[in-house]
Image (cartoon, rainbow, N blue to C red; front, side, top):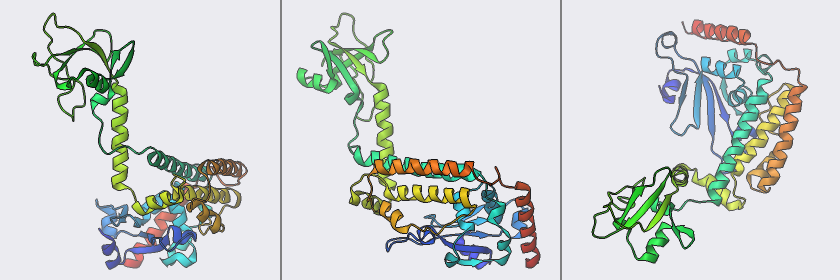
Length: 353
């Protein structure tokens, strides 16, 4: 089922503008995100074809089936609580039956975790981007040889430097295991004996061993930093996957303010923490943010990264205190939400008969 199918069959029961435009944080370059709720036809809901969510390829338009919508509300999911409390100006369509769903029956102390964990995930994303920007990984991939070292002149030097000093080629080297010494090898050299080399090719992921004739002189002891190579491979893979999939407009914005962190993620950290504080103190979800200028200043990179982390720590402590003193229940009333879900679905289906 596609979004066009939902529209053509009249299955959409709520459709709202979401994201920055609902928060009051839109700028001229902001996209228009859409979220909403749909109702599966009765035969599909009771059959084997339950569809919990329908979205477009870019995920900027997402509709949740009524059952999934109510389930996520019962978990105090931040995105779904925002959808339920979308400002009137951002509601494109909302069936009157959905007015029976009240935040006061759903909000609980779970929001301390759901909003808080969501905010912390944004900090983690910002840190991850900072690391990638400050420590880019060269496109040319290092080989196993770059992680090998040999003893030389009462110390150790990289294998590649050792080979350069000797005027040797790695293809004519031979390695043998040294018992009881993990990742340590005896290194031999000959352009006549047909050794296998340190590696068989540039794409090799491990060193290779050779059969060494008895009496052949050992030239050095070599150590392969296997853990270092594995860590590098993971970092290389993650970095270039990120480059391939990153949002270039967002990345360019990050580079333009020169602070080397994802400022949009950090803006959402403060938005989420402040919304959580309001939920704990007032029992309300205020989607439209009153401090637009402050939040957009974060997005524009007006603050130093460490400064924002300190401010976020203070906000998180304020959030914890708000929920300690809150009159909200520990968890939503699942029995009430279950009955409400049944009643709403029953109403919709009876109207369609």
